[in-house]
Image (cartoon, one colour):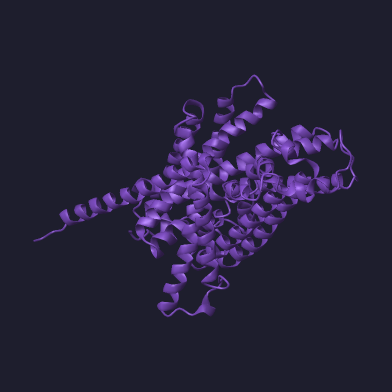
Length: 468
């Protein structure tokens, strides 16, 4: 791993605390909540969904505190990829970085497609690909402008989602207890939450649906990637972690309770978005259009975050010699423009596969995207475990760490065990086994690629030696 260049090829620290907070919050509140929560309740029941999202929230807390200690001590843009390279091995950092890049850039392409489909509600005669092109151009411009431009856009994207979720929670609880009447049904109170409705498909299904929960919570790790461009990371990162964790868990659990109380679990499996249906039943004027706009904003927010994460990660890997050097250059506006262009091109390719090869290449890319999140979380926890050990061995004092993981080494070990357990349970579900094998296979390809790359680099270095 080569040393990074300093001075003029470094990113600006222009993100303020409010940007960092909304970036990490907005990256998690997206399609996983608005579209996926109903499916999870349908599959696992009300009790299974609540336990699943609570358990996922615990894992999220474990990951975030591990990332927080690393990011405060070493606020670099490469984040968990850099930490894995430094404290696990360069091959681990290389593999983790490329897995996350492919997963994040692929997700961005998926979001473009979903945004285009949502626009069909208002413009049924306009092709989906035209809207995809419009949104691609918009997000490319926002990311190419300045880091501050991206941060401001994400701040407002996330703000709309947060307001919408709070409004939904207020309306939902009022509807449950009959304060706001619902069309076609009386006030449900807690009838749908009786014991028989908690686990209609049994308790085991909870483990199968856990990957849906992890998908919903992905994006929280953006706080580490953004650390390299944030003001006063030693103050802002701990605050963002504390605030974000509490709000995420409250938003998700409150939404699950509301949906489970109002809709029977079987009914939720038939609703495209229960959020839209509930507001329509509550008589909210223009409810479908309002929620369609909110979900569109959520999708663009996730796409925006994925582009940012992929671009910065590619730039960081180029700085470390793990990606072509051209991706490590910055524009006059301190934006990794070449890395941004490559990310957008890769996203376009994944977008095309969603139309052309949905049953083959697209499914494989999405499998990598899903598994990469869990593997990234394992990498974060293992990096923190090894960092703290090395820090103390080198004579570092625990009281000098500005942010510390409590109950070390228990926290990172539990995090690793939980994440590995989720991957193991996937092997027992035939529908998710292929995705697991593809994801692990791609990880193996990354390791093998690093081995041959490293061997080639050493050969070139030996040939360049002057023996005179």
